[in-house]
Length: 193
Image 1 (cartoon, one colour):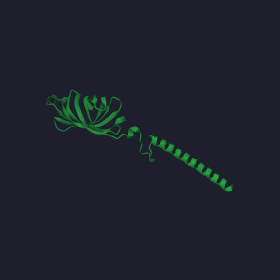
Image 2: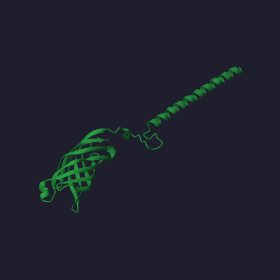
Image 3: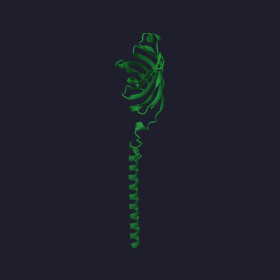
Image 4: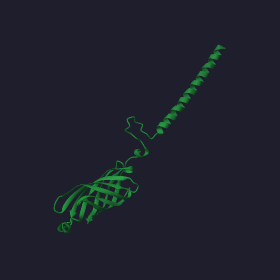
């Protein structure tokens, strides 16, 4: 009889032990599922944030725009421009450029650099750094206004906000013309975002 009770007791202990193991396995699976679905970083150093936006791979894409700008002056000095146009990957945009340097390289040519931003249709921004090479028309040189001519150059894309956060790229200008403080050009290049 003692052996029978001992056998039943051992069987009961094994059964209880298997239930405990099963419960532990279910609990472990649940914890693993919760941790796997988290959008926060798994890394403890805080350097990695795997949100759905940040986890998307950045891609190199072609980009082009149209541009119409109006020069801004303060105390007779060119300080920048306000502009608008249409941009692939952004739609209609407005923007502003701030002249960082302007100097004559000859009697008929000058170089202008600026820091700019474009505010695209959805409210995101693209930041750029421009360098433009200007050739003044002979007529505007003769009358001393330097108010018309052509320009070439381009701008580097150096960041942005929203989907353009961390964007990089380059666009080169085509058909740049200006007259009486109004400039127009098209540009094309690539952007990575």
